[in-house]
Length: 155
Ligand SMILES: [Zn+2]
Ligand SMILES: [Zn+2]
Image 1: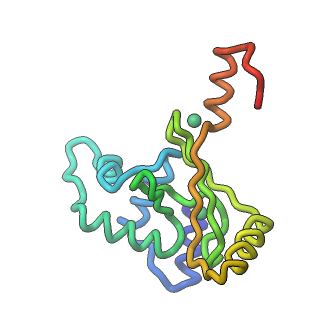
Image 2 (image 1 turned 180 degrees about the vertical axis):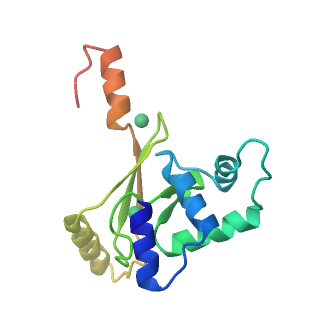
């Protein structure tokens, strides 16, 4: 993950400074999205002075710009990019957000991108950065639910 971040930044002549790397690491440590203050918490080790919020906000802005981090609007939180589309401008990103555990999965296929483009074109609409948030239950939580309700029929 961090190797890819290094590569993406190097290709664009952007610098992955220490604080930017640490913010990215803090987000990558968990599949659940984190708000800016949670990022600060994750970055603060016992007995240490926490980083200034403005520093963290700037690092988040940088990571968003580089496509290394995504913003989950419905949660007002951030998640590290787990796919390899970083840099593919205008490519739609689909977030699968679990309502039970809060985990966020990232999914997108070229077929979906084409379908979305055709849909927008039909309306004469030019999408900038399509982000689709789908809420539901993740595979992990569904398995746990099934164990609890052995008679439940898989939908
Ligand atoms: Zn991504
Ligand atoms: Zn879940």
